[in-house]
Length: 116
Image 1: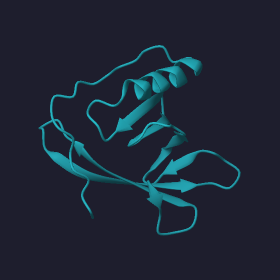
Image 2 (image 1 turned 180 degrees about the vertical axis):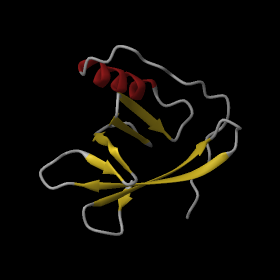
Image 3 (image 1 turned 60 degrees about the vertical axis):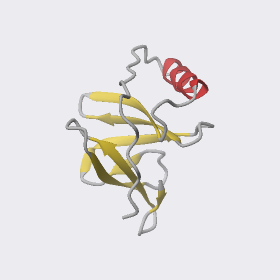
Image 4 (image 1 turned 45 degrees about the horizontal axis):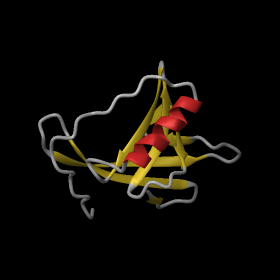
């Protein structure tokens, strides 16, 4: 996560593994609104994103809300984040009345973050 190219803008870059197993760079631009804690995702006017602070190194916790769905996501640079990070995430989601918890399997190494 970094400051965007314009005021009131944040840029999130990641390299994610796609269904076919290849690594693909991704970039999201979030717009901040005066008087709101919601981030608006560029190109997705129906989606709101909230970032949560975390003591977890190399990780980010967020909540996405769109048309007919809301989900909490924990992203981490490690394929096996420290147990305390997972516990912190589960505690946050539990406090916000989310009961289902899905841990996707990590069978491959993480993708390298590209410099572009």
